[in-house]
Image (cartoon, rainbow, N blue to C red):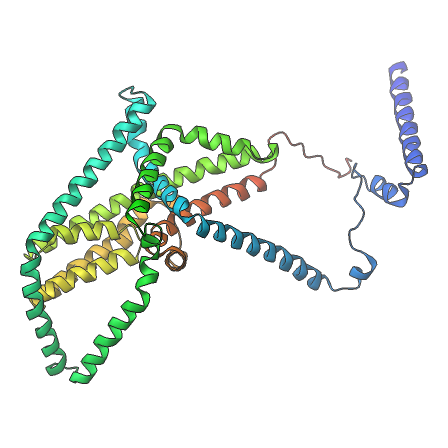
Length: 416
């Protein structure tokens, strides 16, 4: 009984201290707001309302729309500033973007050399970079050599093929006149002349002279080497410049985005190789000239999703048409369509996976935006940028939605 009496005495003392604290808060000017928060049992101080007397008369929907409007204007202004800086620094930004893609492609091999062969970080990065340069240079030399050797024969056959196509257009089911054929040719030429600057702006404006091209190539190689060797250190340094609460979420979001970029580049290379092998094998079987250069064109263009492989397939079919005739061109078209269907419905979902899955509409919009902003280079880097941003933003939003690991949820429900 004595112990029970002590417990009761402590409860009375705690209650008295609580009332004294409330009274002191009232005396110091907290007023009814503090009392309402205390009486509600929330255990915290409710912040005063930010809605003034004039704003209180406005409809809630209008206040909400105004809040969203000015926030969206700030986001658009920030994006415009970023795009302006990118345009002003394109000589630096574009080589760095290409270097990031190359580093994402070569990182797994460099990591394997460090883990399995116990190579030093510098040696592994240098060997991977030099080996990649040798492979690219050898492939380009082989492709260019075959193209130079077979170009005269292709030019001679192309003339006959174009005449056959014109005869079919005039005498076939379309019954086009010479005036209509000339108008279509002029319209095509005018379109190419009009859009030539747009399509080549990313490649020519950033490397308009031989000196700029050499400097861009040197920057790509230099940045790729250091991204391979010190990529983690560089990212930790950049994250360290952020405010302390943002460092850990941004570090993890960056790591997930880098894994997404690596997976995207690896998957794109595999898909491009399968596309090139399938279409190139079909062209070899059909004895179409320039099978290897056309396969290389398919491989390179496949790095631009959806659009690139389609355009290179059209080029392959046109070459088959002007060199081997309509029947062989039809078979080549069927082979290209089959390979494209295999890529779109089997290879892309299987190899890409959900980690880098992007809706086709987002892909088309990203490519179109990249072409407008930076030409061919913009189309090349647009989809990887969207994939990286998609992963990073989703990771940040997901972590913000989670409660902190050391949080304690206290129920305010009365205990019966």
